[in-house]
Amino acid sequence: MLEHALGARHKLATAAILALMCVLGYHAVFGANGLLAYEAKRRESQDLQRQLQSLEQQNAQLQDRIKGLKSDPKAIEKEAREQLRYVRPGEVVYTLPPNSNPKPASSVKGSQLPAR
Image 1 (cartoon, rainbow, N blue to C red):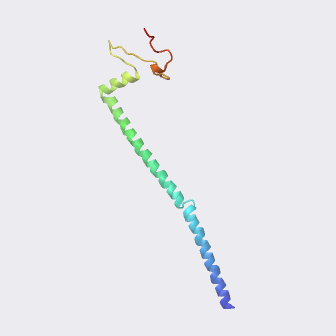
Image 2: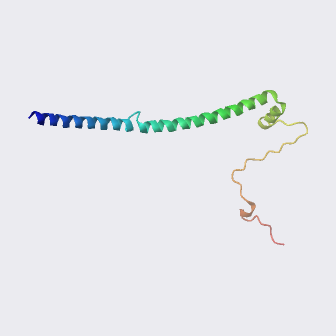
Image 3: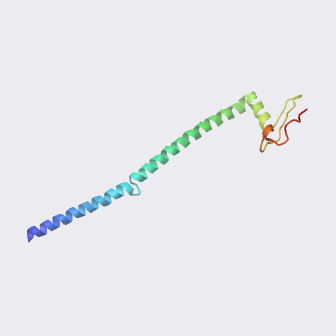
């Protein structure tokens, strides 16, 4: 009888350990800090790192532009011409209206020259 009780206790302990290992394994893979969450956070970290590098490059370009606008007369003139539409005396500026939907001349009906 004692042997039977020890055997049952041994089986119960083994089953409990297996159940505990299954719960721990499930938590290690699917839990809040499991492997799947780790992989998602790693991908997000890589994406944020790429965004950071891109923004740092943009920042460096803008810093160079600011430096040029503070000290380079040609850069200042270029910006004034583009943004403020400044011109030198004697220059003529042609502005074109915005073209919403350009069509090639051959596709417009009646645009061909009449035969002579």
